[in-house]
Amino acid sequence: MKTSQGTFIAKTFAGLEQVLAGELQQLGSTEVSCLKRAVAFTGDSKMLYRANIHCRSAISILKPLSDFSFSSKEDFYKQMREVDWTGLFSRDKTIAVIATAYESEVFNNTMFLAQLGKDAIVDCFSDKYGSRPNVDTAGAQIRIIVNVVRDNCKVSLDSSGEALFKRGYRRSAGQAPINEVLASGLIMLAGWDRESPFFDPMCGSGTFSIEAAMMSANMPPSAERKEFGFSHWNDFEPGLLKTEQENAREGIKKVGARIYASDIKGNMLDTVRRNLMNAGLLGTVEIKKQDFFSLHPRETSGLVMINPPYGHRMNRSDTKELYSNIGESLKHRFAGFRAGLISAAPEAMKYIGLRPEARHTVFNGPLKCEFNLYALFKGKRKEYKSTDTKRDTKRDTKRDTKRDTKRYTKNRKQKED
Image (cartoon, rainbow, N blue to C red; front, side, top):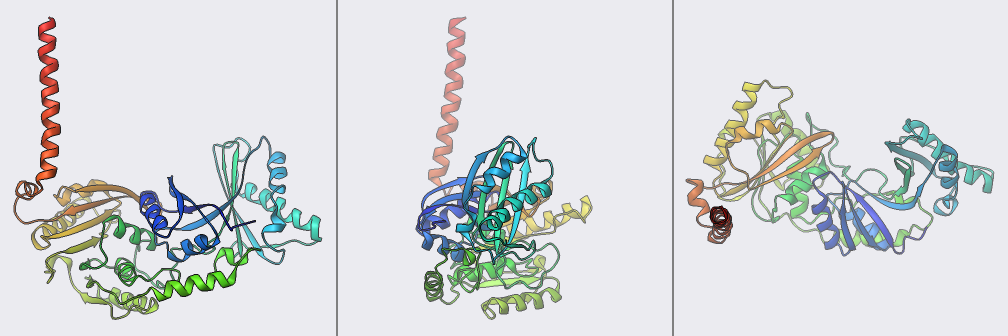
């Protein structure tokens, strides 16, 4: 395999594709295009290493190996054998095949699909060397991804190894913690400038705050990672990886934003401190036991990120009261701020009582969520909106054009009658 120049696939959560594409473009990758829960990009080995080190919104980065159609299990096995596996990695590596199948008449059991794929790989080594790689489903050095859709198969190598959301700082967490990649992606989706005040008033284990501090410090999430999937490939360049990680560390600076993390549960704050310490960021976030509904920020602007209870453990009246109170608190005590709120209970979002300036559909693990962004202001919305003359004029022009077109069509029809 030659990773000197090629196409890669960066995986992410649905809804974060544009965010990840922006990250890859900033890193210097070319021919970036958004896919479903993924972004394709081209680059060389340096770009591949750099993307794994720096990307905050990527779950993993794959190297495509083969794309073929098959008509039977035997045909699938034959074409898997044709991949130059012995040229990709050595027989002393441990491997795992991760397989998925969708609408396939040939494979209705993904375990069998993975087994057959593994057989094709190890048989290549046995034929050539008389020995084969061992399988390690839990901690494999080489992860082979096999995706079957109907009669087509795409085979890739996972260049990341351990998922990139495993930053290493969160060794303890509260209930239903938000994924690190999702938290980081939402902050970027909210358009935070990495310098203005940042509030995490229902912080839980502090993921929003820690990801924000890492961004403000320009701290790459994987600058200290010791091992990646590509570290076990035959064409791995250890010197290049060392250089890229050293360059990444040189760009780290002091946290330039005032970041506030608070939670009504005091025991969670010890978890936040431990996680900050693990991330090397202890002292960069102001931590306080505080009920969000009694919080009066000292700042006059900034970003508020909220991940409230989703409602599956709450009855309808409690959910309505909670979300209504969140909306009231945002409106009356955070005027001048922008707020981002994620929830897997979209029906509860209407109780916020504020009109979002943007809505996004994202996933927190298997949970489909709604992420809304709110511009918070004093007084009536009509007064706030009148300050944006350009936006109002554009909207009014569109409305007037629609009205005039309707009137013209009506008059023309009357004349024809």
